[in-house]
Every structure is written in structure tokens, then in C-alpha cells.
Length: 558
Image (tube, rainbow, N blue to C red; front, top):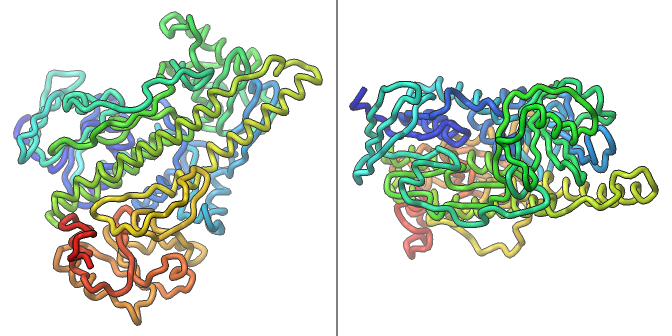
């Protein structure tokens, strides 16, 4: 088939590519997605959906669907540390079940004031939901079993050739933009000659080197382990360190251990692999291997560019994480949200093409930030080695276990109580009316809600079941907190002139006014504050600036 035309071609059907398809399709932008896998992921892969990602799923209308997936709703999402899973529990950082999260989120304030709390669910389940919703959008065509084999950016369009993986068919598609969503080994990135920068492979006692992964079924696990169940189980001993996420809460697990010197995947039989699992459990348990493979821990890499001409990159194609903290997949979803509304606005000609330059300007610093946080988490657990005598049944062994437990409990809190990572990322680009720099340090575990432009809009529950975010428009929102005295009429008129889809939301609330500090707040489609103030003297300039037509620090910006 030749001569097809779409607005966007997406090369890759992981979380970034599928989320981008949803963002574009909801906005009426036609896109075709090609992925060389036969379907969405079989292996569990990422296991933690952060609160910000869940807020994006809520914005798209399927957060409840995601929260119902994975483990039973009353299954605890604790992070538990053991010498071996069936031997000694060292520490436990308690986190709510899905049911508790739905209840608690309605009453939480401060750092964790959010429309959604995190959810522990394997990526394999999330991808199915993202695919199902993307396929339901008429402008979107999802095609697994196809790979982008070549492309040519002609300056005014991109011609893409896709080839069937299990056949001889080819398709030639002409599009306005190509997006490389094709993962760590991105063929699109390599064809552009764009390289990674950063830490290419730290060596540690754990979480630094070649990791051996088993997706396995072991219902007996919950019978032989004498401790309460946990979502994340970490084995800390000098023979077989490992981490293992519960996949379904019934007996499926994603088990990961680091290969030691002399251990090679090709030399490890399935029986030997099960023995590695048994060593971490500390019990001669039976298990069935569903799949196996290797990956490399220790990466903190970010591509030097996220765009070249009409070709964009996102997700693992531009940033590689060690999965401590579960930040890679969540950073990829934020990439898709940022790029999606901008591509749609430019394609619809309701924004300047220069708006697309801010994708890299905004997302690359966040990728560097987040890979840095993940690297610190990995160093904290990976460089902490078990002391001799940890597993002995003696007073010395007990003392060593207490010491390890105190360290690991503090580490678990640091790695998994991360409102600063989740909500605190900030953008500084020409489409943001940035204010005086805040000198407060950017810490993973500290988040102080602020409506200063460049960050996520602060959250508030308006009633027991209505989030402020539920009132926002799908595109732009003008939040009017004193509508009787600050109308924002110039902004509304300018938005209309520029074909900006703007929802005007009036809420008279002293609490919100104290939180947002100004009576008028312009909020982007990604729920990021772009501008705040009172009635501006240059409403048209504000609107033009946030759409990429001028710079906020130009004299005309007032």
C-alpha cells in the first residue's frame, strides 16, 4: 500500500507512543503507530505508576480503569526488605492498597494534595488500556507487527516506510511529523545520529551491571513466606541480592537479580534460574518461568537532542534510567503529554511552529533531573553491602540486622515517598511567564505547592468527590478566582482571536486565592501554569507568547 497520509507517524507502541496516540487522537489529529512487537508488552516491565501519571489518566477519563488493574484492591503496596524473602524481615515501608488510596486521596493536603495517588500496576496491564483507548479514536491507526524501516525528512513533510515484520508487505506514509517512540535502541534516534550523554553503566554491588530478569508464576510463595504480603520484595544478603515486584497479588512475580562475575545468561539453564530465585526466597520453592531476559542497570543517560527537523524523540529513546524509584515510564508519559498538545496546536495552526521547540527546552532538563534522582536512589541501595554475619542466628547477627533494617527503612522512604520528584518538576521556556527564581532546593521528598508559572497547577478538592483538575478544560483554562473584579476579558478575547480553545472557570474561594496568589491564572493543556496575574494590560501578548508567537521577556510583554 502506498500514498497514505497522516498528520503524525509514531514509531513505537510502548507507554510513550500509546499515550501520544491518545493525546493526538483526542484532539482530532490523525496518527498511525507502528510497533515491531506482535502486541503490547507480555513482560511486566515497569511496575509503578506515579501520582502525576495517574492524574493524566484521570484527565483522559480512565484512571479508575487503571486502578482496578494489577493486584487485588486490598493488596498492600508495601516495600519490604528481607535477608531472604522467607527468612528475616529487615524493614518495611507501608503504602496504601488501591482501595485505601481511593479513600485517602480525598483527605490529603500539602505535599500529597493530588487528584490521584500512585498505583502499583505492571506496565503490561497499562499498555493494554492505553492501546484500547487509542484504537477507539477514529483518527488513530494502531499497527503491531510493523517496523519503521526508513524515513526521509524533506523539510516540509516526512516520508516514512514501514515494513511488516512477519511478511513482505510495506507501507509508505507521508506525514507532517515523525515521532521516534522506539525505545532504548531507537532506530530513529540512531538514523538521526543523536547520541546519549551521562552515566553509561555504573558498577555497584547491586543495581549496577547486567541484571537477570524472570517473569515467573509461584503461587506457593504466599504459603511459605511468614510475613505480610508486599508489592515490592527486596532480598539483601551476600549470596543473591534481588528485587521482586508482585504482578497480580496471586502468584505472578517480576524477579530481578544481578549477574555476578562469571555468570552469563546463555549459560544459565531454566533449572539454574529457578535456583537463583530459590536462593533469594531462602526456601526450596517450585516456580514456573513465563519469560526470561537480561537488562543493564546503572544507566543515567539523556539524549543530546529531542528533535531534529520534523522528527521528535521521546520516552526511552531519549532517556535511560536505572529503574530505582520507577521514574522511566512516568517520565515517558509526561513527554507524551507535553509533545501531544503542542503538536496538535501547531498542526491545527492555532500556535506558532516555534512552540514545538519548547518540547526539548522543557523536557530535556526534566529528563536530566529525573535520571539524576534515579541514579541517587540506585546508589543508595546498590552501594550498601550486607555485612558479614547478617544472617547468623546470634546476638551479633541480630544487631547487624537491626542496623541494616534502619538503613533500608530510611532508604525505602527516600525512594518511594517522593512528592518532590512527582510534582516538583518545573519548566523554563519562552512560552512560560517565569517569575523570580525560587532558591528552594529541588528535593525528591519535598514538594511545596506553588502556582508560580512553569510548574503543575496546585491541587485542591472542591468537594468530597470533585478535584479542581476536574473543572479544568481539556485544552487551555483561565481560572478566575475573583471574577467580579478581575474579568480577564482581554485574555478571553485574545484567545478567541487566536483560535485558542479556552475554558473559563470561575471559583470564588479564599483558600484557592491564597494558594494561587493571583486572581487570574492561565493553565496549559498539560495542567502547567503558564501565566498568572490580575487584568493584564497586554492580554493579547500573553496569549501570543504562550502559543509561541513572542517571548515573555520582550518589552511588548509588559
